[in-house]
Length: 109
Image 1 (spheres, rainbow, N blue to C red):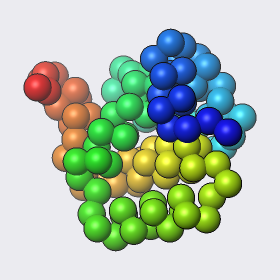
Image 2 (image 1 turned 30 degrees about the horizontal axis):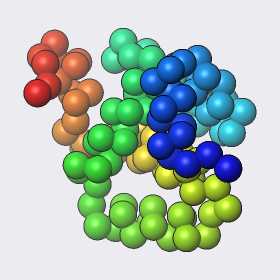
Image 3 (image 1 turned 90 degrees about the vertical axis):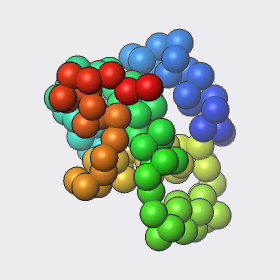
């Protein structure tokens, strides 16, 4: 069972590996993430890293409770965590994130 750290380390080494892993794990989520990544000119692994950073900075208390409940009940917490954060980013239309600055052509410190 891979941890979130293992998954992210793999993503840094090979974005194709993360994309394949996500496709094998959740094909629908992989397709949605690939489409969103393409809109921002990112790889799927770059989008996943952005989703994690955005979740960490911007998710509300209810989002964290939902994540923790999912992790508690999961037999694969790394996969559950990454998938939940990517899904959250895809469905968080009001999220002011790094992606907003990429789209505007600005850099984010």
